[in-house]
Image 1 (cartoon, rainbow, N blue to C red):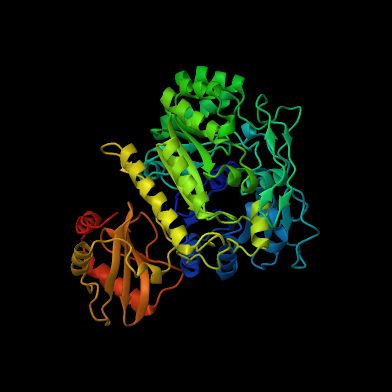
Image 2: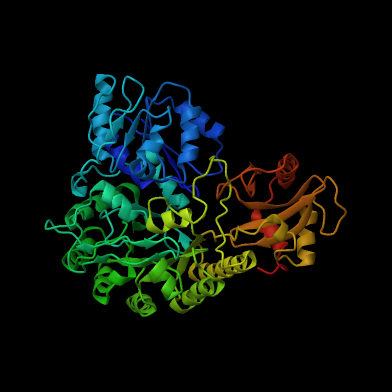
Length: 600
């Protein structure tokens, strides 16, 4: 059985695939997996899938990935049974069913439905009803209405994740598959629980929770009051979700059950530590007391967690520190308090955020944060408040992204109803995603905010990454149009011209001809950004980075070259191929040295 998943940026690991691959192996079959990033074309992806010659192809896709996933499935030769699951299939099964290349749709959590499907396939053509599965019948149409999701399984009763279905685990660890922190390290992803007690307006977790049937009741779960009233015109969430602080999630693994597995993973793969990829780490104080008492003796490796700042009391942080937590991540999301509250439904005060980050520092726990920009209703002043808040909180690392509306979320649906572009991409080959600039913010203001965030992130990473550690690639401001970049994005004149000479390209101000000239150059902390222009094509953004560290249109011995946008003029593609040959054995450090005079 072959699992196909999508990731941006490219990553060799998927939690859902690891969980479902364990089910496949328990059923006596062989699981394999392929992950595609947005630099893959449909044709390339189809060739790689067909080369595996799988009997069953299982695709997991978010709404943003479904158009490309559908094109991939429809490009494949007939033969394998094809099942689609994940967020989009669960929330919009009728949309997935429109593709004639889909044989079955999994709704909700997939462990038990997948086991039932494999058993049915062993007996011949599967026939319904099967739990959580919508099947195409003999008539060629899907039979009846979409079924309900299979009831949420007890996480402690599920098989352990199958890491090896995704590749050689030591190689994955060496590459760095961790999400949190300023460096790429050898921390292994694991999970202690499922579910999140909060209802942020931009997040898919509450919607998935309703579909998958996460219970909140007497069996022990965070009590919740939720009213998803959303004002489309103002993008304001009128009511909110409140999670109880003294009741555990129902689907949390017992501490002994978790420690037994982590000790075995420690012995099998020798990771540096563990990164808990829970939507929200358990908050029950008795559970945390047990973790603090047993984890150091039974496992003894450092670990990282993610938790809502409102749940991160001093008492919980103290227990995490005692257990061995070395990094705490939380969503800050926006610096403007009113934007956090009304638009994002993040009812967390700046005082609470400051207290959490200060407490972590006092307890010796590193901190990580995530923020968004270009939010509906955001102004430059609001966005700049995010930069200023990060400067006050002083996280050891942070991640930032431009807002992308997710279907079936209050904010996403309201934004798209108001004309905000949806996240779906028409092809895997898209190399960039251009989200919308909020009406109250100019493109120049948006670009300025992105460059402020990138500069702060560079400084943070440089300060946090110690000698010999691999600094995490820094996010790139990618939303200026090439014509805006042509005015010059940063390289000092002499440095940019020196780089152009080394690359065999024209210098700025040279007459336009067939050889591209370098209009601008800058180092963003992880790659070189060049703006090239010739008589055959207008200004276009090009990236040069370490080979294997991101999307590539063409490669040299040690470098990757890519272009912005889903398409590029043929003359530019030819120029990149020539440039790759010219670079030969050149390394990124050599090129960066030429830009020492550039402002970064």
